[in-house]
Length: 378
Image (cartoon, rainbow, N blue to C red; front, side):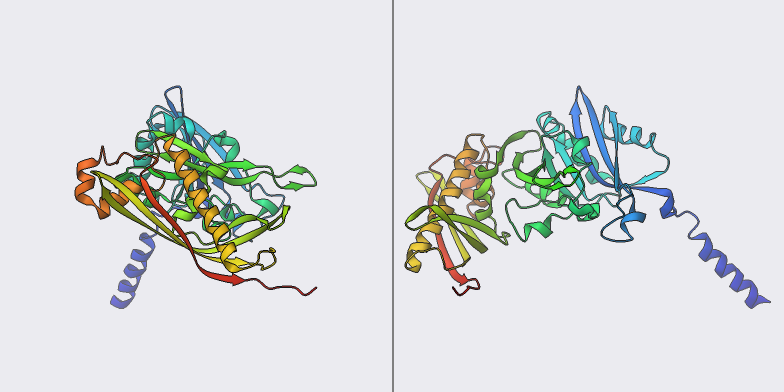
C-alpha cells in the first residue's frame, strides 16, 4: 500500500511540473523584426513563421503561406510590442528571433539605443540574432521569401554565413558583436545594409530576394553614413574573416577581355605608429589567390603586381569615402586603444581619434600563395 501511494505521489509531481508549459501549437513564433520610427512613434514589423510547414521539409508546400507580417506602433518600443500582442490570436514567442532590421529613419532619430536595450533586456531574445539596416519599407522587405520557395529559415537574412563563405562582400554582424563594437573605443559599428533585389525571375514574373548592398556605420546615438557597392569593397580586404572574394582584371593585350581572380584567404594586420605627436597606421594585407592560368600574362610577378595594386586601390577608395562621412570603418581608433594606449588617451575624443587622409602611413599588400584551377585541353 505504501509503495503504491509513493508511486502515485511521484507520478503526480512529474505531471504537475509540466502543467505550466505552453503547447507549441498554441504559440506564434517571430522569425524576424523590423523597427522604424516615424512622427515620434516606434513602428514594429513582426515576421511570423509557420514552423509546422517548415519542419516537414526545407522546401515547404507551394500552397502554404510561409510568413505573415504584423504591424504595430507605440510611444516606446515596448508599447509597440504590447499593441502587437493585442492583434494576434495566440501567445507570441520571441525565442526564435533570427534577425532584426533597423530603418534609416530610426537610426537618424537617435532612438536606436533604446531599441537595442529592449532586445538585450528581454529574456526570450538571444545575442545571436543578426542585425541589418535598410532604406526600404520594412513591411515589404520582411515579406520577401527565398528563391525556389526554400524555407524562411534558410534565407540570407536568417543564415548569412552560408552565402558569406562563397562571397565575402560584407561581414555579417550579430547582436553580441554589435554591442561589443559600440562599447569599445571608436564606439562605431558597420552594419550590413539590405535591399530586395530583382535579379531572379519565375514564369510568373520577378522574384525578389535579399541582397547586401553595403554598410551603414552607426553609433549609439546616430547614423554616421553609408557606403554602397564599389565604395564598400575595401572592407573585405580589411577583415580576417573573409573566406572568399574576387578581383577582375583586364587581360594583357586585349582591353575587352577580362579575367576574374579568386581570393581564398585574407590576413590583415594594423600597426599604430606615433609620429609627430599624432597616430598613423601601417597596414599589411596578405592573401592567397586562385587563378585559371589563362589570362595571357607572362610571368607570375606581373600578375601579383596587378592584383595587389587592385586590392590597395579598393582599400584606399573605401577609406576615402568613409572620411567624407566622418566614419571609422576600419576601426583604427580601436587598434590605437589596444596597441598605443597612452597616445590614444592623449588624442582621443569620446573614444575616437581624428582621422585624415594621411592617417594611413603605409599600405602593403602581398600574395602568400598562388593556386591554379583545373585547366582544360584545347
